Image (cartoon, rainbow, N blue to C red; front, side):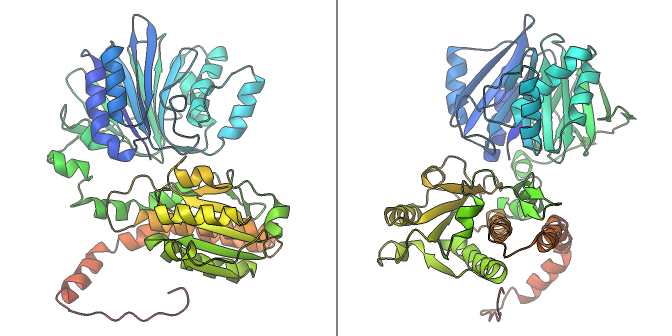
Length: 476
């Protein structure tokens, strides 16, 4: 989950974009950047770390221009660094992107063979190079962008600049949030309402497969394939505080409703449906190494420990490998019995949980295989683990875990399929059935969330009860 902001009008773009990024920093804070067009040239400023670092850079090296785009990043592909920060530029084309391009590796190889050179590890840079490639044979900028989008698979909200057309800003959406703000001959685009609410309250909410072009103080909406659309703006009367929470009463409720999106992002690009297998790019274990595992110990704290308990059911049930679940603070002090045939898996949302990190180091010192499930790219645990499965929950502000927990369960299920296929405990047909069931999860989560009125009635009925007794068996 990242945050994007775009501006096209007569004002200086940089202050407007910076202000918008401050409102979106909850969507990502490992790097940030801005690009503007002035005097026929696009200039990019980027910095690693929180937004304040970019602000300091812009004081030393200011940007001018009335058309621009900005981005605050939560890493998915590529570690947090200045080189992986957005915007990304290829030739005359500059891009910011929120989402996951599932076929970026295939496109990257194709573009390399066509002579393109990549500077970052991100999936986003592929979009910039793809548009540049299309412009080689299709000089019409708008058509070239549409041709590029036709090649993309996955989720995206994208803003694009082309220094050859300095008064044009193109934005498109498929699977990631995007809202357009309409001003007086000026236009705004952002991942969320708070970023632009100070400038306009007339908003157009874009749907999947739609594109907008801002040009010469005018705009037009269409589908990505070019069918014109009539979109009516909606007046937003939320307070700024309400807007930050997406209209929800508090962040926890907002994050509960983000769970379907988080699960979609975590499985995106990882399902090999025909083979009944999954692709885990950072796991760093061969099939032979996975098949040699005799025992698994899952180590975690708090909510992650509860996810680990579910992982035990998944792995033992499907792969028939014994699994122990340990609390990290206990594991590191009890002289654990692990060896080279043992996989120690650690789970941490932040990747910085002190006891879990210490448990990982203890396991490594004893020669155990090791891997992590983590939500933060390039965190301490991710860096020190041999392999890692990243969840794509995005930042979680609520104290009680919601989307981080369900994405940990998703990652454990993905690992179970991969382990089962490598060890031959799961055949291709069984793998196909498991993947089909997993693909239904986001829609099923949405169905449950649509029952919120019923849930609220039940909660009101029992809100004064002093004690609850929960009975469960197995996974429950």
